[in-house]
Structures are given as C-alpha cells and as structure tokens.
Image 1 (tube, rainbow over the protein chains, first blue to last red):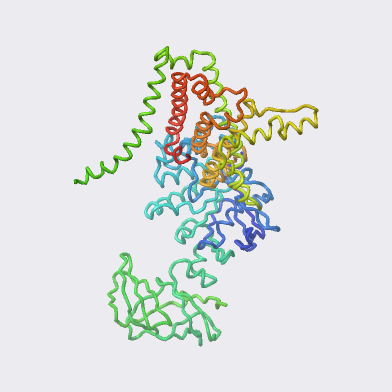
Image 2 (spheres, rainbow over the protein chains, first blue to last red):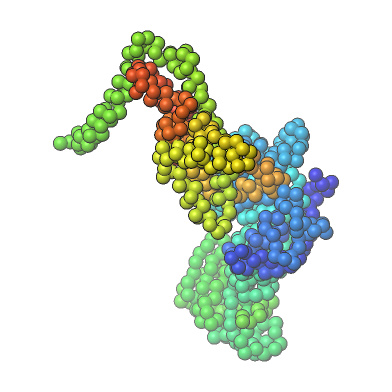
Length: 353
Length: 271
C-alpha cells in the first residue's frame, strides 16, 4: 500500500483517444490534468465519451496509440487496472452476490494479503464512515439501493486508492435518495481528500460535487472550468443549454445593443454584428412594468413552482423567453410586461457553424 | 356441468396415462424387486452381494468422473466460446452440439472406430511403438463415450450462464487488485455455480443410465444398466433386475433432487 495513502494521486491524461474495433470514434484525443485531491466531474449526455475517458483512466480501456495516462508523473498506460490502485464505484454497484457486506468491503484488502484482524478493523472503520452499521453480515440481495451504493463506495475506498473513480454512482436511485446521498458523498470526498473522478449526465450533481467540471460532447471536451465558470460563462451554445436553463437569443448587435423584436437590450460588445447568438439565464431577468421598459413582451404562460414561478414571454425575442420571477410577483397570461436584464447577464456565444 | 367438474374432466386423460404407463409399472417394479427368493432382502442384495455392489460403485464412480471432467472441459471451452469472436465460431459451436444428434449406439460405434481393435489410435500407436493401443472395450472407452455426449449439453448451459455474467463484477474485482486467477476463483466460478450444479446433475444422470453406448462397447465392462439387462434377459432374474432398477432410479433421482435444492429451478431449465 502506498505511503501517501488517502492523499490521492495526481492524474495527467495526454492525447488519449479511443476508437473502437468497429471504427467508431468514442473519444477524440484529449489532454487533461487532475490535481491531487481534486474532484473532477466528467459531464455530458450519453455517448459523449465520458465513460470511455473514465475507463481509460481506470485501465479498463487502452487508449489509441499515442495516448498516455500518468499517475503522479508515472506512466501507467500499460499497467493493468489491478495494479493501478484505483477505487471504482460502478453504476450497477457490481457488488459480489456470493459475499456478505463485510466480505465485499474487505475483498480488496484480502487480495492484498492484509491479515484478518487488521482487515476487520478497516472494514469496521468504513462501515461507520458510510453509515451502514448493522448490515455487516447481510447478503447483497438483502440490501436496498441506497445501502448497496454505500457498500460499493466503502469497498472502493477500503483499499486506500490513489484515485477514486465513480461511474454514475447515483443514477440508479430515486430522486429524494439521490439528493441525500449526493450531499453525503460530497462530505465524504472532502473528508478523505482523495482525488476523485466522477462521471454523470446530471448537471446539478456535477455542480454540487465538482471542483472542476469537464463538459463533453460527441467524444470531445466542450469546456473545462469550475461550476461557476461553466454556468456563467459557457463557451458554446451546447454548454449553455446543457447546464441549467438558458435562453438562447439570436439577433443583430448595433451600438452595444441586441436589437430584438420587443426592444433593445444592452450588451457588453462594442462591435456591430449582423448575426449574434447570446445567452440569458432565466433568473437574471427582472419583471418590470411595460411602460418605461426598453424591452417588453407578452406573458404566454405562468407556471407556479413554489419557491419561484416560471413565466414564458412571447414577442420580446425571436423565440419564447423563459423568466424565473419571485413567487410574489403578480403575473397573468396575456399581460404586457417589461423586462430588465443587466448587460453583465447577457453572454455572447460564438456563432454555430 | 360446473366449471370445476369440467376442469377435472379435462385432466382425466392425463390421469389415465399417468396411472397406466407410469404409476402402475413403477409400483409393479417395486413389488417385483421384493418377490425374489429373498423377499424384501433382495433389495439389500444390491449392497451385500459383492458383484452387484462392485457394479454399483463402478457405475457411480464412472458417472462422477464423467461429470467432473465434463464440467472442467466444458467450462473452459464454453467460457472461451462465449467471450471471443473469431471466424468459424458459429460452425464450431454447431459442430460441438453435433453429438446430441447421435444415439448411444452410434457413439459406441465411433469409440470403437477410434480406439477399437481396428481403430485409429491402435493403428497409430502400432506404427509408432509397434504395439496396438486398444481401450474401446474397457471402462476408459465408455468414459470417453460418456464425455462425448455429456460435453455438448454442459457447454450450452455454461455458455448461457457466461452470457448472463455481469462483466462489471469482474471489473470491480480487478479494480480491487484481483489478478486473473483470483477473479475466476472469487467472482466467475461462484457466479457459474448454479449452472455447474444444474448441468452437472444432468451429466451425472445421463452417465448413470446410458445403455446404448455401454451395450455397444461392453465386452468387459460392468455398469448398472448392463447388469440389469443381463440379469433380466440372460438370467431371467426378474426380482434382482427390478431391485437394481429401483436402486439406479433412487440414486439418480436423489442427485437430481439435491442439485435442484441447491440451485432452485435451474436444473429443470437445463434439462
């Protein structure tokens, strides 16, 4: 076991691409650095290459020629997964059905030849850490989904891996449990200080857990950044629409304004453009009275969500505009209203090719 | 007619057939076994008389050996065939299941062609060492024949089980540091255990009762089905052959029942 157990290893992925045997390109050559102790989230829709990237780091897939995977500066490309000292949590949990909970958690230690006594102590530590006391002697088929998830996590962490790899670990759970476990997982990852790479298609999971998020699209990295960077300054229309709700506005820019059907919207851009694409988040739009506003539209529909209400506005932009208004605002469908948007909230996106 | 009596009426043909061709002969068999000069003790003779006991032990040992070797060969082959794609794979699988099409007599005949007095192996060893290697008519020939028709059944069951294996389990074990042997020992073989029990029980039952192959090869082999045959046709010893039949049935049935209790309904499915 490594001396720096629990502190995690740094990961460097260099030009790692993956072409499958049938010729499909699953991952374009990508280069990525993950700092020691960092939680990096690979986020994207299914088929974007995020799982392939994870499996290359794990050692379950070999990158195409030229790709290299380094842990703490050491080239691991040719090292099989069993000698990479990585912990892995699978979407299906992949718990051994022929073993008890304790035996599952202790399996990696047993393989490493850790004496039974020491093993039992470590298993007890993890049982406490993951809140599964009392389940030690259960069989796997006697556990609920949430309990299985905890056992899978305990088993992966038991071997004090340099890197923890999580492949959609919460996807199989129902929404309420997912939210609770997400919080627990977050605290656990911080407490362990382990390097973690987390694959998900759920952007809110990515936001909460990731120190940095890698948004992937069609086998390529679309953007890398902190959750805030990804949310507020998306670099492409894909990223803007994949993360949170976004209004995409297509208009001309003249004299520092977006020229819209419902009026003019100031934007931080000095150059006049005949066809610009901009993003406006629904929660950055304030509702005002129609009279004095430079941009106005008609309320198409109002959905009361509880903590807020979502208004859909027509006539302001070239397409319907979503607005998140406080739940105290009185709004009725058919009403004309003004829209006030700070120029800081309008994000110019590169035009689509 | 009420709905209930209609259902009973529909079951009547089945009941008649079952009674006429299954229950009655079976009862008669059991009674016949106790009608010899020794009465009920005739059943004991299976175990006490040296010749019968030796045959019984021989048969069980042969069936056990067939089952074990079949499982080993079929597991390795089945795993390989299910996990790898190569040209000619489909043809190979089709050929492997070929023996299922042959009756025991043909299998025995093929063993003679292979290892009999005019057989290929004898020819070959004669040219190499100047000595004819002949084992078709011994228990080894019979063993080979049993393997030949047990392997296809078991391979098919194992392949189906391997297909259902969760590859994630193997990947999880590897991520925890398990090498190829440890993965097999701790994950793959335990997951295949129900298939082993199911297909092994079938192989065992088949080897216990197979007659055609034994009859074709039998110059100096004593296995239970042969013994029953000789006691019945040559010695006209009805009571002993009945007792032996009941013994054979009970042993085989016990093994199948044991296997079923270990693996749920998988045994029935494998048959």
